[in-house]
Figure 1 (cartoon, helix red, strand yellow):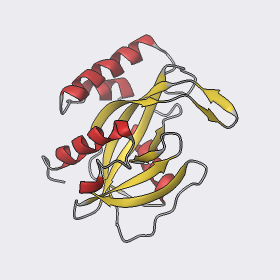
Figure 2 (cartoon, rainbow, N blue to C red):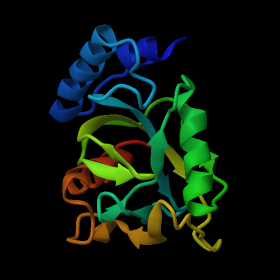
Figure 3 (tube, rainbow, N blue to C red):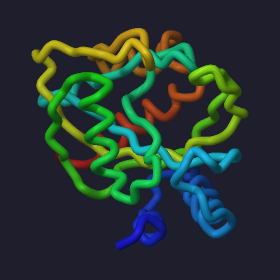
Figure 4 (spheres, rainbow, N blue to C red):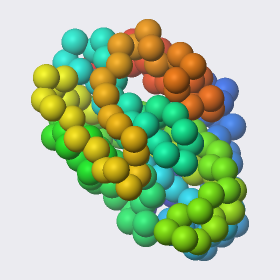
Length: 186
């Protein structure tokens, strides 16, 4: 099954996801290069909502470009297997080995990326069409991070997921992820 079919089959959790799903599908139908960074308007990213076994904490990474904390994830860079990208991104950004709790998409959202310099080259402002999977990891394992992409990685209590240290645009998404987790039995 290709990534468009997976997006088509996704059942939105709320109004934000319903609207973003429409945007995702319109984007796929409009552009040929949605899986690469060559599309200047946006591209797909695969991310992970990594929780501890007790479902009281989540992992966040301090993102340099966004200057704040956000769940781990990254560009799909041409790969249609979004889940494997999300697992790889968690390992690269945190050092954690994760257990995938559901192979289906857990959440979707369209996220803004401000214009920035990357490897000496200007990257215009664009959107990440973000697909999130739910995963579990041991919160006792030491975390590691890549200094070229972030300033740190840590476990936070769910109560901290919407505080002022989080990226502005991610606070409502964190809240939604936690709310959605509480509606299902993982």
